[in-house]
Image (tube, rainbow over all chains, first blue to last red; front, side, top):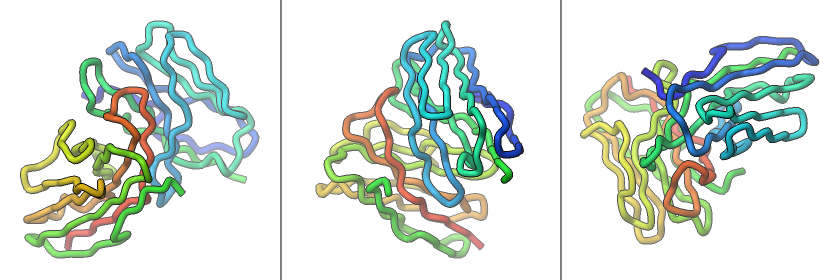
Length: 111
Length: 115
């Protein structure tokens, strides 16, 4: 059983469409991170959320941490081909320093 | 460019062999993390070193070992290699000792193929 469940697993859309990907768990987290990994590269941190209900915006990307701090979502407005990549959520279980990643959502944005 | 360097970029070897992967963290970062990424398992944490000492251990096989040297670079040794060890191996670094909100900077990875 994965600590972090991400959905959907795959997403293929056209340029200009909006999309939302999700990261869910049955556990409560003190913080959660989103990374993007482009093909052939290592993951790059996009954002860290720490407060329940928190919303952070990064240009066309909007990140939300659930009120109960068990889930998070990433919404992309007007997706562009440059948004193509694997979106990973990550956290460390309480009392642990072990980083845990979800399996990711693989996004392809077609021109 | 994250500032984290990994060598080699690609490695092809045979079952039963031993290989060493090398990582240099960003300047000033004290922690080094090693991960294995495969299609069926996703990104799996192996081990973390902080300032030369082992800090956290994940699902690292006994055939695998790592160390961090006084200059803070790290090496991951994989021995008695099996076909299933074929994967991408990433190194990441961070400033502090780790924890949920610390930013990790990932290297470009080493792609290992065991034949």
